[in-house]
Image (cartoon, rainbow, N blue to C red; front, side):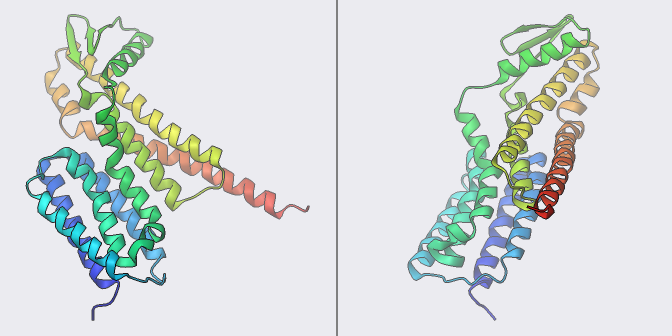
Length: 276
């Protein structure tokens, strides 16, 4: 039997299926995988709120329905637009929040909406600011120099020996930074730790880790090109190998977060149990 939770849940599931289908058609395997991680995190948060009393409002429900209709109308013609696809989760989140809990849904589901924001919006913002490819090229050259190579940099071109690679905007590390910011948000939402300093540090470390690991990948690709190993270059640049660097970043950050948060929880427990 339908109730105030059933219809928003069905709408959310349908929109999620459409969104994942578009991501799959675009061939963006990394973003498809990240979407599943975020979906699991949001599902966990929603399960914790399953007993929350919701009060849908007629005006908000109507607005939510209009927003859903607009998303569906725009989704097909804009299914090849990376910008729209990255914004789609947050727009869907707004619509479902309105359907489920009226205008107070923005407050009730603020954590879920925050995660949907980090799933795609930072990448759109990055695309509007200055390309960081030259910075990535210089830092990758520094890493190569540090391990004994003699690279040169000309703008976005990284030269090693007689060969050179161009650090495109897609390889600048912006994508990695945005993904790692999202992973930091997931960790902070699901495993919160008190202390604004720690929260800021977690986000900063995540962004830095995304940039550094990507720069290591660029350096590695430059070495492969220098050695004329183009089959390996294609594998690590476009094939499954390219996903291993991102997976490594997520795993390393998760390990660091677990170690530090466990220590902080232990310290807080000791502090709260010690006599005043």
